[in-house]
Length: 397
Ligand code: HSE
Image (tube, rainbow, N blue to C red):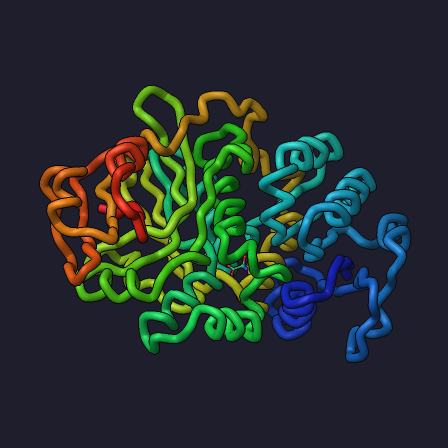
């Protein structure tokens, strides 16, 4: 019998216990032994079938030599960081879905895991149930990764889909996403782009092999997005999606950012709806490879956690290819990247043309919505300086 502990018992933690119980036969067949949840760390005990496993004393997990893997689903940094360090120091593998902790302290925690000859695995931290970190670091290991971009926040994508399909108000769609267990405890992280930002940092760390610090990555979410732009995009053959994007630059540097984008509807990203996420990885040998699936929710995220538990137990001694260099130099301003831009201005086509030269008009009715030729983010700011800008976002071509 292999015993594990779960720290935190919200949406993901509960899902982990369910997957371990419901898929017990398949898991045992693959591990050669049954897997059992021995303890659940939780501050406020909940009634139900797991009540007798609950404890609020981390020492009971830390000092229990029978517990070989700890699944951290507390979220946030403070307690999760402290307990993860102590669990690794006690020689236990740690598995997590906590993107904030991995993005901010992943290098240190991986170093501690290496020192203690255990695994720190976090497949569930990006893309929920979609296998992405394993393919990126294993199946595509022979590539130089040139770009990774994707729809990385299920809550934002759910809200955008509801706005397009039913004209739902932002706040109603957000409430639905919360009720379905997609949103973070504080949903500002979802709608302000921070959650997608943490995920693109982890993808960039692994893709480029160097630390990308969250504080260097500009993150803009969908909170200020207007239904008007959603409709203009749709009528012009585009969809608005929140993308995280990490790019290797020609000079050897790299950059990353999160922002809403206009995406042509023929791009497969445009058809990714509801809570689904999609991630495109461009390798210099493979070309574009796309990953798609449920990016949030109880069972998809738990599936990735439990698979990591199984892998932690089977990898002997540990997964060396999961890691990156602490050196964060060479990170450049994403405003240097050139793309077409969408603008909606209070003004006429003449105003738009005076600022940007030739533009493609999408709508004109007192306000003017248009697309520019490819320009850098710096040019987009400089050239629109004299305009009354109501909305501005990049186009993904
Ligand atoms: N709040 C996150 C999302 C959960 O909506 O994508 C999965 O990381």
